[in-house]
Length: 252
Length: 263
Image 1 (cartoon, chains in turn purple, brown):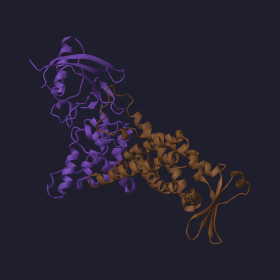
Image 2 (tube, one colour):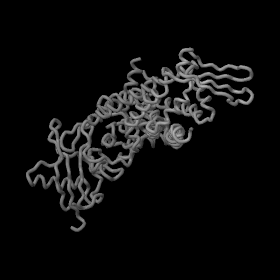
Image 3 (tube, helix red, strand yellow):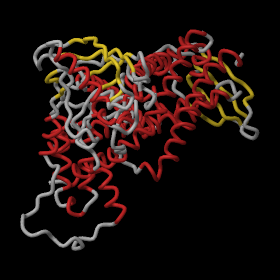
Image 4 (tube, chains in turn orange, purple):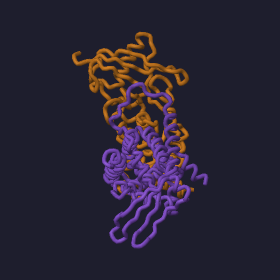
């Protein structure tokens, strides 16, 4: 087909968490510009399997940009060159014939590489488990209008809750800090009356889980906001800083 | 107390410490640059030398100066710790060149800029502060006509004579004139800035200060969680025009003035 591309891929290959990895070069032939980035890798993997070689391992699930599983550092940017999308929503039309594409896993002490492009993001889950919830008694669903919530706060909480936990903020950050993720998770509850009950404990515990996991500290470069596929704002980080200081002064 | 140390040792707490100490140092810069503007006065250094006496003898200022030295150390050591901790958070670096269009150069290089400033502060203190406190310095006598405020007579007292007489700074009225005796720091400043290498070092350091404050000032407010949307314009405006441009430019103008203009 005309318009199809041939590309050179430099892909990080690593057997497991213990062994050190290296870059391997592959050619992706006859790639349609309408393919997604992951479909392009599927094609490359088909060829590898036919040739009796190990396919490139990468994380993926929904391929609709909402699960947050795909995690690739493409040509120096988390999720590749297009703003506001995950790697699965990146299309090959963003590249031109003959391009060399370097694909690396997220790099952070808190995200060890499990294999090739797959990283272990359970550190995010530990942060969530430390306080990313509200404790409620089970029973029948409460009346939707029983607790009044200002519309602005509801909207802002919803924006924060749009975080899919993909880890692009960590990957893009010069300090491998997870402040954008952490602050979005803290904010989505801090803004709602249901979340205020445990607010002080939540922010302290979640920040401790963040620091213990080995993420860096924020220096306000704001690379995270620029690379976030869901457009999470660094305003959340300001809110986290405020919440944490207030909790440390007045918390139990 | 454990709660307080937990706060201070957390990544966010350390950022608060960075922000608060940084803003205190920024406030100091306003005082420092305003006082030093007296170097531009054409009065044989009288105003500047008197100001130096005041800054080193007035008890509240002395207390603030110790606080200032402690703050500089705290800011530098905490910054150093954060740089190390942040480096450790990414043991394996990326192979591909990072796309940096979304971030400012200053924001990514605060550690390097801070190191330049630390070297500058040490040099600057050896040049003038140490010299003033412990060095052998010439003294100066000014006779000012009380009615007109004009300097009618100035005399230099050599360092050796001042030492043997155990001279103390004084301001006294004598027959309708005011007599001022003080260390001549102005002459030390003028002498130091006749050296082009010293001037170049000071100007380059002020460039580092400019970039450090361009990111640092507005970053401090983000760290403190001051709502961005409401105040972002004002904070970035003050940070850019006053702290990153005006203050470093005024400081840099001082060595340049002594090298090229002052006779």
